[in-house]
Image (cartoon, rainbow, N blue to C red; front, side):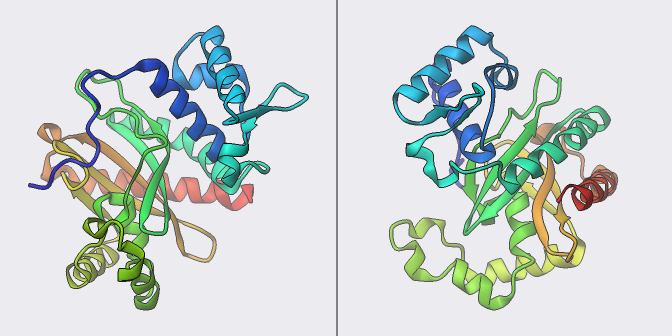
Length: 258
């Protein structure tokens, strides 16, 4: 079995984790208030304010005249206006929460950038044994449910470009076997869903479907993640049907949002 890609450190520092999550949120979404950060992190406003003040001090954030915080110079990749990612996340959250209500498993929305996938929204379920929030995390695309769904929509030439050997000289371990990947993507394309059984993290199973734009192109992956001990293959058809209903509802909302 492959080594898990994301293993929490044995001595996690909550303040560091909160600061990194806040920086990721600012980079992805373009602007947040102290109250919004506090709510998302589950901390007091005073704690969120201190985190943001430190991010401003280190140029990871800036505050505008309306006391809204944005990505700073260090995160200038997404320091301009409210992005499409932010709109996608905002539209998806109600649907993620409904999925959690229906399935009581953690729900996620992810997008692809090159050969990686970033989780842009995550809503945890209430079960004691659960998959934690993956919001802001980045994984190799071929190792995730959403990544497989989004890669399956590429043409052969586009896939060749994503996994060109020269793009992976510094990390050859992140380049999958092209023939094996094509076979798997063809299967995902035919079925319309993907299942990740411990590909990205040991003990985790995820099931997902694509979220498509008006032109039919997959622009995100909608998934639920659960501990492997709770996954029942006989429920797969039902899980996929529930996810597809949520994806269609999200697509309808996106069609009027953009």
